[in-house]
Length: 506
Image 1: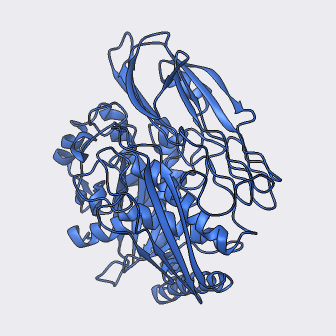
Image 2: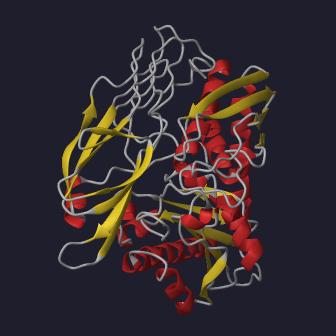
Image 3: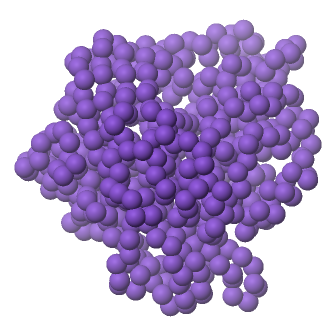
Protein backbone atom coordinates (compact mmCIF):
# COMPACT_ATOMS: atom_id res chain seq x y z
CA UNK A 1 0.00 0.00 0.00
CA UNK A 2 2.76 2.41 0.96
CA UNK A 3 4.86 1.71 -2.11
CA UNK A 4 1.94 2.31 -4.46
CA UNK A 5 0.98 5.53 -2.66
CA UNK A 6 4.51 6.88 -2.86
CA UNK A 7 5.04 5.97 -6.51
CA UNK A 8 1.76 7.45 -7.75
CA UNK A 9 1.62 10.64 -5.63
CA UNK A 10 2.19 14.04 -7.23
CA UNK A 11 3.74 16.07 -4.40
CA UNK A 12 7.36 15.98 -3.24
CA UNK A 13 6.01 15.83 0.29
CA UNK A 14 4.67 12.31 -0.32
CA UNK A 15 6.84 10.87 -3.08
CA UNK A 16 10.16 12.27 -1.79
CA UNK A 17 9.68 12.94 1.96
CA UNK A 18 7.36 9.91 2.37
CA UNK A 19 4.99 11.76 4.67
CA UNK A 20 2.30 9.08 4.66
CA UNK A 21 1.24 5.94 6.53
CA UNK A 22 -0.77 2.78 5.77
CA UNK A 23 -2.40 0.16 7.96
CA UNK A 24 -4.77 -2.83 7.95
CA UNK A 25 -7.56 -3.34 10.51
CA UNK A 26 -9.79 -6.29 11.37
CA UNK A 27 -13.55 -6.33 10.89
CA UNK A 28 -14.02 -4.52 14.21
CA UNK A 29 -11.67 -1.70 13.23
CA UNK A 30 -8.82 -2.87 15.49
CA UNK A 31 -5.29 -2.54 14.13
CA UNK A 32 -3.73 -5.72 12.74
CA UNK A 33 -0.65 -4.40 10.92
CA UNK A 34 1.00 -1.06 10.18
CA UNK A 35 3.57 -0.07 7.61
CA UNK A 36 7.01 1.17 8.65
CA UNK A 37 5.79 4.72 8.21
CA UNK A 38 5.01 7.71 10.50
CA UNK A 39 4.47 6.95 14.22
CA UNK A 40 2.39 10.08 14.76
CA UNK A 41 0.04 8.93 11.99
CA UNK A 42 -0.10 5.26 12.83
CA UNK A 43 -0.97 5.49 16.49
CA UNK A 44 -3.70 8.05 15.84
CA UNK A 45 -5.31 6.45 12.77
CA UNK A 46 -7.42 3.89 14.64
CA UNK A 47 -9.51 6.74 16.07
CA UNK A 48 -10.14 8.02 12.52
CA UNK A 49 -11.09 4.53 11.35
CA UNK A 50 -13.60 4.22 14.19
CA UNK A 51 -15.08 7.63 13.36
CA UNK A 52 -15.35 6.70 9.66
CA UNK A 53 -17.11 3.43 10.48
CA UNK A 54 -19.51 5.01 12.97
CA UNK A 55 -20.40 8.01 10.81
CA UNK A 56 -20.56 6.45 7.33
CA UNK A 57 -20.91 2.66 7.62
CA UNK A 58 -18.85 2.13 4.44
CA UNK A 59 -20.20 -0.51 2.09
CA UNK A 60 -18.63 -2.29 -0.91
CA UNK A 61 -16.74 0.17 -3.10
CA UNK A 62 -17.05 3.07 -0.62
CA UNK A 63 -14.08 5.15 0.53
CA UNK A 64 -14.46 7.59 3.41
CA UNK A 65 -12.11 10.56 3.92
CA UNK A 66 -11.64 12.87 6.90
CA UNK A 67 -9.11 15.23 8.44
CA UNK A 68 -11.02 16.74 11.37
CA UNK A 69 -8.75 16.70 14.46
CA UNK A 70 -11.83 16.51 16.65
CA UNK A 71 -12.98 13.34 14.88
CA UNK A 72 -9.75 11.32 15.14
CA UNK A 73 -7.56 13.34 12.75
CA UNK A 74 -4.27 14.94 13.74
CA UNK A 75 -4.05 18.26 11.87
CA UNK A 76 -5.83 19.42 8.73
CA UNK A 77 -3.08 18.67 6.16
CA UNK A 78 -3.25 14.98 7.15
CA UNK A 79 -6.13 13.49 5.14
CA UNK A 80 -7.14 9.96 6.09
CA UNK A 81 -8.86 7.58 3.67
CA UNK A 82 -10.68 4.46 4.90
CA UNK A 83 -12.20 1.57 2.93
CA UNK A 84 -14.12 -1.52 4.05
CA UNK A 85 -13.01 -4.83 2.52
CA UNK A 86 -15.74 -7.36 1.80
CA UNK A 87 -15.14 -10.99 0.81
CA UNK A 88 -17.57 -13.38 -0.94
CA UNK A 89 -20.23 -14.83 1.29
CA UNK A 90 -19.87 -12.22 4.03
CA UNK A 91 -22.34 -9.40 4.70
CA UNK A 92 -20.04 -7.41 6.99
CA UNK A 93 -16.50 -6.20 6.32
CA UNK A 94 -13.73 -8.71 6.88
CA UNK A 95 -11.10 -5.94 7.04
CA UNK A 96 -10.66 -2.20 6.83
CA UNK A 97 -7.71 -0.60 5.08
CA UNK A 98 -6.63 2.98 5.68
CA UNK A 99 -3.92 5.46 4.81
CA UNK A 100 -3.05 8.97 5.90
CA UNK A 101 -1.03 11.42 3.83
CA UNK A 102 0.13 14.95 4.57
CA UNK A 103 -1.07 17.25 1.78
CA UNK A 104 1.19 20.20 1.06
CA UNK A 105 -1.77 22.60 1.08
CA UNK A 106 -5.38 22.33 2.26
CA UNK A 107 -6.18 26.05 2.19
CA UNK A 108 -6.24 28.30 5.23
CA UNK A 109 -4.49 31.57 5.95
CA UNK A 110 -0.96 30.58 4.86
CA UNK A 111 0.50 28.60 1.94
CA UNK A 112 1.33 25.11 3.13
CA UNK A 113 -1.54 25.15 5.65
CA UNK A 114 0.72 25.26 8.72
CA UNK A 115 -0.12 28.80 9.87
CA UNK A 116 0.24 30.76 13.08
CA UNK A 117 -3.46 30.33 13.64
CA UNK A 118 -5.63 31.04 16.68
CA UNK A 119 -8.51 28.73 15.75
CA UNK A 120 -9.07 25.69 13.57
CA UNK A 121 -11.09 27.67 11.02
CA UNK A 122 -7.95 29.55 9.93
CA UNK A 123 -5.96 26.40 9.19
CA UNK A 124 -7.70 25.08 6.07
CA UNK A 125 -10.67 23.07 4.93
CA UNK A 126 -11.99 20.79 7.68
CA UNK A 127 -13.44 17.49 6.46
CA UNK A 128 -15.72 15.38 8.68
CA UNK A 129 -16.08 11.68 7.82
CA UNK A 130 -17.67 11.67 4.37
CA UNK A 131 -17.79 9.28 1.40
CA UNK A 132 -15.59 10.52 -1.44
CA UNK A 133 -16.18 7.28 -3.35
CA UNK A 134 -19.60 5.60 -3.34
CA UNK A 135 -19.97 2.12 -4.75
CA UNK A 136 -16.77 2.55 -6.74
CA UNK A 137 -17.75 5.93 -8.26
CA UNK A 138 -16.05 9.19 -7.33
CA UNK A 139 -18.33 11.88 -5.89
CA UNK A 140 -17.17 14.53 -8.35
CA UNK A 141 -19.13 17.48 -6.83
CA UNK A 142 -17.58 16.73 -3.43
CA UNK A 143 -14.11 16.48 -4.95
CA UNK A 144 -14.59 19.80 -6.76
CA UNK A 145 -15.70 21.41 -3.49
CA UNK A 146 -12.52 20.22 -1.79
CA UNK A 147 -10.26 21.32 -4.64
CA UNK A 148 -11.88 24.76 -4.77
CA UNK A 149 -10.58 25.40 -1.24
CA UNK A 150 -6.87 24.66 -1.79
CA UNK A 151 -4.07 26.55 -3.53
CA UNK A 152 -2.76 23.65 -5.61
CA UNK A 153 -5.83 21.70 -6.79
CA UNK A 154 -4.19 19.49 -9.40
CA UNK A 155 -1.51 18.32 -6.99
CA UNK A 156 -4.20 17.62 -4.39
CA UNK A 157 -6.24 15.68 -6.95
CA UNK A 158 -3.17 13.59 -7.77
CA UNK A 159 -2.31 12.87 -4.15
CA UNK A 160 -5.90 11.99 -3.24
CA UNK A 161 -6.12 9.66 -6.23
CA UNK A 162 -2.89 7.98 -5.11
CA UNK A 163 -4.44 7.40 -1.69
CA UNK A 164 -7.52 5.80 -3.26
CA UNK A 165 -5.43 3.51 -5.47
CA UNK A 166 -3.38 2.50 -2.44
CA UNK A 167 -6.55 1.40 -0.64
CA UNK A 168 -7.66 -0.59 -3.68
CA UNK A 169 -4.32 -2.40 -3.64
CA UNK A 170 -4.66 -3.12 0.07
CA UNK A 171 -8.18 -4.49 -0.39
CA UNK A 172 -7.00 -6.63 -3.29
CA UNK A 173 -4.18 -8.14 -1.21
CA UNK A 174 -6.55 -8.85 1.72
CA UNK A 175 -8.94 -10.70 -0.58
CA UNK A 176 -6.06 -12.69 -2.06
CA UNK A 177 -5.03 -13.70 1.46
CA UNK A 178 -8.54 -14.93 2.22
CA UNK A 179 -8.67 -16.84 -1.08
CA UNK A 180 -5.45 -18.67 -0.16
CA UNK A 181 -6.03 -19.30 3.54
CA UNK A 182 -9.78 -19.03 4.13
CA UNK A 183 -11.48 -16.31 6.18
CA UNK A 184 -11.68 -18.36 9.39
CA UNK A 185 -7.93 -18.96 9.39
CA UNK A 186 -7.15 -15.34 8.60
CA UNK A 187 -9.39 -14.10 11.42
CA UNK A 188 -7.78 -16.55 13.80
CA UNK A 189 -4.31 -15.36 12.85
CA UNK A 190 -5.26 -11.66 13.10
CA UNK A 191 -6.48 -12.27 16.66
CA UNK A 192 -3.37 -14.31 17.42
CA UNK A 193 -1.09 -11.48 16.23
CA UNK A 194 -2.89 -9.01 18.50
CA UNK A 195 -2.71 -11.40 21.46
CA UNK A 196 0.99 -12.01 20.81
CA UNK A 197 1.72 -8.26 20.75
CA UNK A 198 -0.16 -7.90 24.05
CA UNK A 199 1.89 -10.67 25.66
CA UNK A 200 5.14 -9.08 24.48
CA UNK A 201 4.11 -5.71 25.90
CA UNK A 202 3.03 -7.20 29.22
CA UNK A 203 6.38 -8.97 29.48
CA UNK A 204 8.25 -5.72 28.81
CA UNK A 205 6.22 -3.90 31.48
CA UNK A 206 6.70 -6.70 34.00
CA UNK A 207 10.47 -6.31 33.66
CA UNK A 208 10.24 -2.71 34.96
CA UNK A 209 10.20 -2.05 38.72
CA UNK A 210 6.79 -1.11 40.06
CA UNK A 211 6.49 2.56 40.90
CA UNK A 212 5.37 6.02 39.84
CA UNK A 213 7.75 7.91 37.56
CA UNK A 214 7.10 11.60 36.82
CA UNK A 215 8.76 13.96 34.38
CA UNK A 216 8.11 17.40 32.92
CA UNK A 217 9.38 19.44 30.00
CA UNK A 218 8.05 22.38 28.05
CA UNK A 219 7.39 23.95 24.69
CA UNK A 220 9.09 27.31 24.09
CA UNK A 221 5.85 29.16 23.27
CA UNK A 222 2.73 28.90 21.12
CA UNK A 223 3.45 31.48 18.41
CA UNK A 224 1.09 34.07 19.92
CA UNK A 225 3.25 35.11 22.87
CA UNK A 226 2.15 32.52 25.43
CA UNK A 227 4.80 30.30 26.95
CA UNK A 228 6.68 28.40 28.08
CA UNK A 229 4.03 25.67 28.16
CA UNK A 230 4.49 22.65 30.39
CA UNK A 231 3.91 19.05 29.35
CA UNK A 232 3.84 16.72 32.38
CA UNK A 233 3.41 12.98 32.75
CA UNK A 234 3.37 10.40 35.50
CA UNK A 235 3.81 6.76 34.50
CA UNK A 236 2.70 4.20 37.07
CA UNK A 237 3.94 0.65 36.56
CA UNK A 238 2.03 -2.09 38.37
CA UNK A 239 3.03 -5.60 37.45
CA UNK A 240 2.41 -6.04 33.72
CA UNK A 241 0.31 -2.89 33.35
CA UNK A 242 1.02 0.83 32.96
CA UNK A 243 -1.06 3.92 33.60
CA UNK A 244 -0.03 7.12 31.83
CA UNK A 245 -1.35 10.36 33.34
CA UNK A 246 -0.80 13.77 31.72
CA UNK A 247 -2.45 15.72 34.56
CA UNK A 248 -0.65 18.99 35.26
CA UNK A 249 -0.02 19.68 31.57
CA UNK A 250 -0.74 23.28 30.52
CA UNK A 251 -4.22 24.22 29.40
CA UNK A 252 -4.86 24.48 25.67
CA UNK A 253 -3.58 27.73 24.28
CA UNK A 254 -4.39 30.38 21.68
CA UNK A 255 -1.66 29.24 19.27
CA UNK A 256 -1.54 26.12 17.14
CA UNK A 257 0.54 23.85 19.42
CA UNK A 258 -2.59 22.12 20.74
CA UNK A 259 -2.69 18.34 20.31
CA UNK A 260 -5.73 16.08 20.50
CA UNK A 261 -6.18 12.82 22.37
CA UNK A 262 -5.30 10.81 19.25
CA UNK A 263 -1.83 12.37 19.22
CA UNK A 264 -1.34 11.60 22.93
CA UNK A 265 -2.26 7.99 22.19
CA UNK A 266 0.09 7.83 19.19
CA UNK A 267 3.07 9.12 21.18
CA UNK A 268 2.34 6.79 24.10
CA UNK A 269 2.05 3.77 21.81
CA UNK A 270 5.33 4.69 20.08
CA UNK A 271 7.31 5.07 23.31
CA UNK A 272 6.03 1.87 24.91
CA UNK A 273 6.60 -0.04 21.67
CA UNK A 274 10.25 1.02 21.97
CA UNK A 275 10.42 -0.79 25.33
CA UNK A 276 9.82 -4.15 23.65
CA UNK A 277 13.09 -5.78 22.66
CA UNK A 278 13.36 -6.79 19.01
CA UNK A 279 10.59 -6.91 16.45
CA UNK A 280 6.95 -7.13 17.50
CA UNK A 281 3.74 -6.79 15.46
CA UNK A 282 2.63 -3.15 15.66
CA UNK A 283 -1.07 -3.54 16.38
CA UNK A 284 -3.91 -2.97 18.83
CA UNK A 285 -2.60 -5.60 21.24
CA UNK A 286 0.26 -3.34 22.32
CA UNK A 287 -2.09 -0.86 23.97
CA UNK A 288 -4.23 -3.35 25.90
CA UNK A 289 -2.10 -3.26 29.08
CA UNK A 290 -1.82 0.57 28.99
CA UNK A 291 -4.36 3.16 30.14
CA UNK A 292 -4.02 6.83 29.21
CA UNK A 293 -5.41 9.80 31.11
CA UNK A 294 -5.23 13.09 29.18
CA UNK A 295 -7.40 15.78 30.78
CA UNK A 296 -9.74 17.50 28.34
CA UNK A 297 -8.90 21.10 27.53
CA UNK A 298 -5.13 20.68 27.91
CA UNK A 299 -2.32 20.74 25.34
CA UNK A 300 -2.58 16.97 25.02
CA UNK A 301 -6.38 16.77 24.61
CA UNK A 302 -7.50 20.11 23.21
CA UNK A 303 -11.14 20.90 22.49
CA UNK A 304 -12.70 22.69 19.52
CA UNK A 305 -12.14 25.21 18.09
CA UNK A 306 -8.47 25.09 19.11
CA UNK A 307 -5.82 25.63 16.45
CA UNK A 308 -4.02 22.31 15.88
CA UNK A 309 -1.42 22.61 13.09
CA UNK A 310 1.66 22.33 15.32
CA UNK A 311 0.24 19.94 17.90
CA UNK A 312 0.78 17.00 15.57
CA UNK A 313 4.38 17.89 14.82
CA UNK A 314 5.73 19.76 17.85
CA UNK A 315 3.67 18.79 20.89
CA UNK A 316 3.80 15.12 19.88
CA UNK A 317 7.59 15.34 20.15
CA UNK A 318 7.42 16.87 23.62
CA UNK A 319 4.97 14.19 24.75
CA UNK A 320 7.55 11.63 23.60
CA UNK A 321 10.30 13.46 25.47
CA UNK A 322 8.46 13.46 28.80
CA UNK A 323 7.45 9.80 28.48
CA UNK A 324 11.05 8.81 27.80
CA UNK A 325 12.22 11.01 30.68
CA UNK A 326 9.82 9.26 33.04
CA UNK A 327 10.78 5.78 31.85
CA UNK A 328 14.48 6.64 32.18
CA UNK A 329 13.92 6.51 35.93
CA UNK A 330 12.53 2.98 35.67
CA UNK A 331 15.08 1.72 33.13
CA UNK A 332 18.07 4.10 33.15
CA UNK A 333 20.23 1.59 31.31
CA UNK A 334 17.91 1.53 28.30
CA UNK A 335 16.47 5.01 27.67
CA UNK A 336 18.28 7.64 25.56
CA UNK A 337 18.55 11.36 26.19
CA UNK A 338 16.22 13.73 24.39
CA UNK A 339 16.50 14.01 20.63
CA UNK A 340 15.96 17.29 18.75
CA UNK A 341 12.35 17.45 19.97
CA UNK A 342 11.04 19.43 17.02
CA UNK A 343 10.20 18.72 13.39
CA UNK A 344 11.41 22.20 12.33
CA UNK A 345 8.42 22.72 10.05
CA UNK A 346 9.01 24.97 7.06
CA UNK A 347 6.22 25.85 4.64
CA UNK A 348 6.06 28.46 1.91
CA UNK A 349 4.17 29.38 -1.22
CA UNK A 350 3.49 31.99 -3.82
CA UNK A 351 3.17 32.30 -7.58
CA UNK A 352 5.62 30.82 -10.08
CA UNK A 353 7.35 33.45 -12.22
CA UNK A 354 6.20 33.43 -15.82
CA UNK A 355 3.34 30.95 -15.56
CA UNK A 356 1.47 32.63 -12.75
CA UNK A 357 0.66 29.21 -11.29
CA UNK A 358 0.47 28.93 -7.50
CA UNK A 359 2.91 26.74 -5.62
CA UNK A 360 2.99 25.52 -2.02
CA UNK A 361 5.60 23.45 -0.23
CA UNK A 362 6.03 21.87 3.20
CA UNK A 363 8.87 19.97 4.80
CA UNK A 364 10.23 18.88 8.13
CA UNK A 365 13.96 19.15 8.80
CA UNK A 366 15.96 16.58 10.76
CA UNK A 367 17.93 17.21 13.93
CA UNK A 368 20.21 15.33 16.28
CA UNK A 369 19.33 12.05 18.00
CA UNK A 370 19.84 11.77 21.74
CA UNK A 371 22.67 9.57 22.99
CA UNK A 372 21.96 6.38 24.92
CA UNK A 373 23.86 4.34 27.51
CA UNK A 374 25.50 2.22 24.81
CA UNK A 375 25.59 4.49 21.77
CA UNK A 376 26.24 8.02 20.62
CA UNK A 377 23.33 9.87 19.05
CA UNK A 378 23.04 9.78 15.28
CA UNK A 379 23.43 13.14 13.53
CA UNK A 380 21.01 14.66 11.02
CA UNK A 381 18.19 12.20 11.67
CA UNK A 382 14.41 12.39 11.75
CA UNK A 383 13.59 10.99 15.19
CA UNK A 384 10.61 9.73 17.19
CA UNK A 385 7.19 10.85 15.95
CA UNK A 386 8.43 11.65 12.47
CA UNK A 387 9.91 9.02 10.20
CA UNK A 388 10.14 11.06 7.03
CA UNK A 389 13.01 11.55 4.64
CA UNK A 390 14.66 14.80 3.63
CA UNK A 391 13.63 16.21 0.25
CA UNK A 392 16.61 15.71 -2.11
CA UNK A 393 18.18 18.97 -3.25
CA UNK A 394 17.78 17.98 -6.91
CA UNK A 395 14.03 17.35 -6.59
CA UNK A 396 13.53 20.46 -4.45
CA UNK A 397 15.29 22.87 -6.82
CA UNK A 398 13.66 21.30 -9.87
CA UNK A 399 10.10 21.73 -8.60
CA UNK A 400 10.24 25.00 -6.63
CA UNK A 401 11.75 28.49 -7.17
CA UNK A 402 14.45 28.10 -4.51
CA UNK A 403 18.15 27.35 -4.38
CA UNK A 404 19.66 25.31 -1.55
CA UNK A 405 22.74 27.31 -0.51
CA UNK A 406 23.69 25.23 2.55
CA UNK A 407 22.80 21.72 3.68
CA UNK A 408 25.14 20.09 6.16
CA UNK A 409 25.66 18.84 9.71
CA UNK A 410 25.63 21.47 12.40
CA UNK A 411 28.97 20.45 13.86
CA UNK A 412 29.25 20.43 17.64
CA UNK A 413 25.53 20.93 18.31
CA UNK A 414 25.09 17.57 20.07
CA UNK A 415 25.37 17.54 23.86
CA UNK A 416 28.56 16.27 25.45
CA UNK A 417 28.88 13.29 27.76
CA UNK A 418 30.21 9.77 27.93
CA UNK A 419 28.08 9.25 24.84
CA UNK A 420 27.68 12.38 22.73
CA UNK A 421 24.37 13.55 21.28
CA UNK A 422 23.97 13.67 17.52
CA UNK A 423 24.46 16.90 15.62
CA UNK A 424 21.62 18.80 14.01
CA UNK A 425 21.40 20.20 10.49
CA UNK A 426 22.06 23.53 8.79
CA UNK A 427 19.65 24.10 5.90
CA UNK A 428 19.63 27.42 4.06
CA UNK A 429 17.40 28.34 1.14
CA UNK A 430 17.67 31.27 -1.25
CA UNK A 431 14.32 32.27 -2.72
CA UNK A 432 14.25 33.03 -6.45
CA UNK A 433 10.85 34.77 -6.29
CA UNK A 434 8.63 36.43 -3.73
CA UNK A 435 6.92 34.05 -1.32
CA UNK A 436 5.16 33.81 2.02
CA UNK A 437 6.97 31.66 4.61
CA UNK A 438 5.90 30.06 7.88
CA UNK A 439 8.19 28.36 10.40
CA UNK A 440 6.80 26.23 13.23
CA UNK A 441 9.70 25.03 15.36
CA UNK A 442 10.65 24.54 18.99
CA UNK A 443 13.69 23.87 21.19
CA UNK A 444 14.92 27.39 20.35
CA UNK A 445 14.92 28.66 23.95
CA UNK A 446 16.45 25.56 25.55
CA UNK A 447 18.12 22.52 24.05
CA UNK A 448 17.10 18.87 24.40
CA UNK A 449 17.93 17.46 27.82
CA UNK A 450 20.80 15.09 28.55
CA UNK A 451 20.51 12.09 30.86
CA UNK A 452 22.72 10.52 33.56
CA UNK A 453 24.78 13.70 33.73
CA UNK A 454 25.00 14.27 29.99
CA UNK A 455 24.85 17.81 28.62
CA UNK A 456 21.86 19.19 26.70
CA UNK A 457 22.06 19.61 22.96
CA UNK A 458 22.31 23.10 21.53
CA UNK A 459 19.01 24.88 20.86
CA UNK A 460 18.09 25.53 17.25
CA UNK A 461 18.07 28.87 15.43
CA UNK A 462 16.04 30.42 12.61
CA UNK A 463 17.43 33.30 10.56
CA UNK A 464 16.34 35.54 7.68
CA UNK A 465 19.32 37.11 5.88
CA UNK A 466 21.37 36.53 9.04
CA UNK A 467 18.83 38.13 11.40
CA UNK A 468 17.30 35.95 14.15
CA UNK A 469 13.68 34.88 13.82
CA UNK A 470 11.31 33.56 16.49
CA UNK A 471 10.69 29.84 16.86
CA UNK A 472 7.25 30.27 15.30
CA UNK A 473 6.83 33.01 12.73
CA UNK A 474 5.25 34.06 9.44
CA UNK A 475 6.89 36.53 7.05
CA UNK A 476 7.27 37.56 3.41
CA UNK A 477 10.45 37.13 1.37
CA UNK A 478 11.64 38.64 -1.91
CA UNK A 479 13.88 37.17 -4.56
CA UNK A 480 17.40 36.87 -3.13
CA UNK A 481 16.35 36.51 0.50
CA UNK A 482 17.84 33.60 2.44
CA UNK A 483 16.14 31.59 5.17
CA UNK A 484 18.41 29.51 7.37
CA UNK A 485 17.27 26.78 9.78
CA UNK A 486 19.79 25.43 12.29
CA UNK A 487 18.23 22.45 14.05
CA UNK A 488 18.91 21.32 17.64
CA UNK A 489 21.45 18.67 18.51
CA UNK A 490 20.52 15.68 20.66
CA UNK A 491 21.24 15.45 24.38
CA UNK A 492 24.32 13.67 25.68
CA UNK A 493 24.33 10.67 28.03
CA UNK A 494 26.58 10.39 31.11
CA UNK A 495 29.48 12.43 32.34
CA UNK A 496 28.14 15.94 32.97
CA UNK A 497 26.36 17.71 35.84
CA UNK A 498 22.65 17.15 35.10
CA UNK A 499 20.68 14.38 36.83
CA UNK A 500 17.89 12.12 35.67
CA UNK A 501 14.54 13.74 36.43
CA UNK A 502 13.13 17.07 35.39
CA UNK A 503 15.50 18.87 32.97
CA UNK A 504 17.31 21.94 34.32
CA UNK A 505 15.04 24.95 34.61
CA UNK A 506 11.75 23.09 34.20
